[in-house]
Length: 555
Ligand code: F6P
Image (cartoon, rainbow, N blue to C red):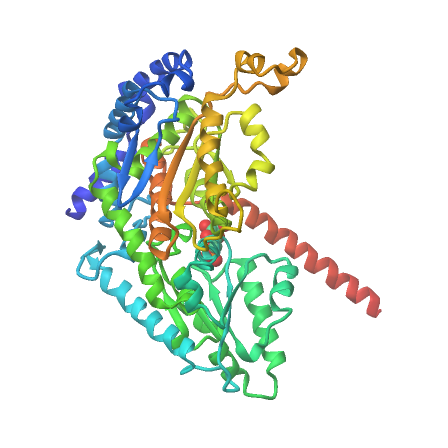
């Protein structure tokens, strides 16, 4: 694609308002038809699974329990076409500057591209740059893991503390947790630990450094901008901690060179901080913070913990979904259909929330990561051209691993508000367990819930059911489940580095699809700025009044 045509493509998609199209109107008109149908009735159709499921590489998306009919699905696909979804996917993956307010390409998919691919930004092929950093990470992580690179006192660097916040923290922590009990990851992490410090609350740091030995510690500062207030204060505090605790054992320069490294796009600021050139791992402005887990942001700390080899599997999994996303027709495309269902539920059926329910304890931090990916991307007030959106965009995402969530907020989602749910499950456990005399394995127990909950939400329990069960009349209203509550289920074979990469890419792309259809800019985040500026003013006031207090006490 030539630059001239890319520019005209961006201005063309920026000026479209999807809510003014016939396809939008057709979906609005379809809402009353679905209001008359209960999921209990819809699920009677034996063909429903064929119609409303997608299989890709042994991953199954079952969306039979969404409040749609074949006609509505067709209208959603038409809406996607009208929104030029395929063209936007192609544009994103080929380096078009879709982040129009920051004039940046959106190329997290280039981070997991194959080495023989060519992807251009401003006429420059970015794939060789990606592979140069990947090679640097491979060499560095292997040297640290093998003990070739050691701390300033000659001891092995077995503890890594990753300092970063938002996109420079949530994705890496999600993947770290996901692979902790994967047999391969577990094996590779033998004798090592990876810790995260994100919050500027000194307690986050205190809790992490309580039991660690600075002689064995490598600090990784992760910050795209290298200006984020929380991260920089934590970085300075940890630098002081290292210098104090290792004082007298080597010069400050040597301590920093042996114990600190950084991941950033702002190489100048990293150098000024005192970090050795060899210890800087670059990434680029075309990687959004919340989409950066596949860059050095995640790749460096996670390769130190689990090995570069394991993390390459993770990237390959994400790449597999990138190819699926770009090539599968919309109705056979997992991220595309998930995104369209999000638009249907949030905008047309007007459900403002969405729950992410992984039936897998290793995905304990997945919902936290997707909260940022989705809410920072699609919680916007205007379309690409600045016109206020005539509907609220984005969803309120939240979640917990099942079955813990069941004993917490499921009451509300069964009998209170309608919250569309995504159930995520795995056929096999990372750590199978079956006690003697137990009817089923622990994983089967977990998965019984994974399969039962979507049906409970969809079908509910009627007054007639309660009467047949002999429930006293006065209790029947309390025990009634209205049902008709939509959900999708995603079933994977097993949670490995590869499938973890697939899962990540599915959800990154789901968010992009929703933003593409709504016609907003999913890749900037101006909404986080105002609070930061106000905090600066308060910080100044704190400083001035404390100084004043100190002066008075000296006098
Ligand atoms: O909270 C705003 C934000 O800019 C996020 O988008 C980003 O992930 C986070 O701060 C951290 O930014 P940085 O990596 O530049 O420190």
